[in-house]
View 1 (spheres, rainbow, N blue to C red):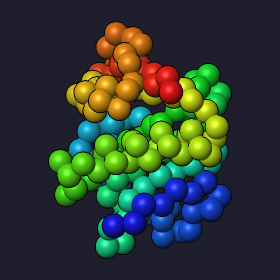
View 2: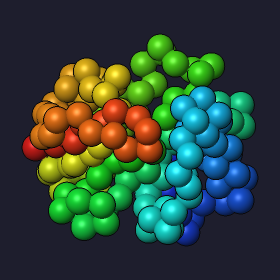
View 3: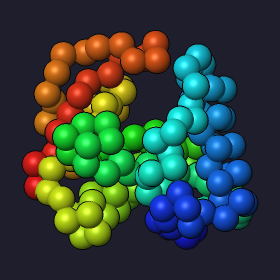
View 4: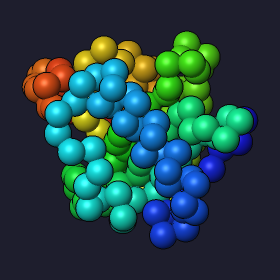
Length: 147
């Protein structure tokens, strides 16, 4: 398994295809999200993902300060069904936090967490900053990491 972090402009066509394929599989196929997954934010993001046998099996995008929140943000977090319960989500989030601290020189991170995985984020130091709200038909909670 190989971990890769690239800005959108540095992704090759195969990487981009596999990212979109995995996002569609999880968000549209499994979670039945009706809203458009691809947005113009992707073009200004860093994309962190794990490749296993040519497939993206874990993925998140890192948004710079001011794109979604006043802090940098992590979004579109996923692990494909075949690789869940293996610790990949935790490993990926640690890598994302380190990238934001080391490469973007930022200490604070805000994200919109699906309610069922709030414990994962709390275990990494994120704290709840809102009540439950609906986003794309899924219960979410705004969370913040203060590093």
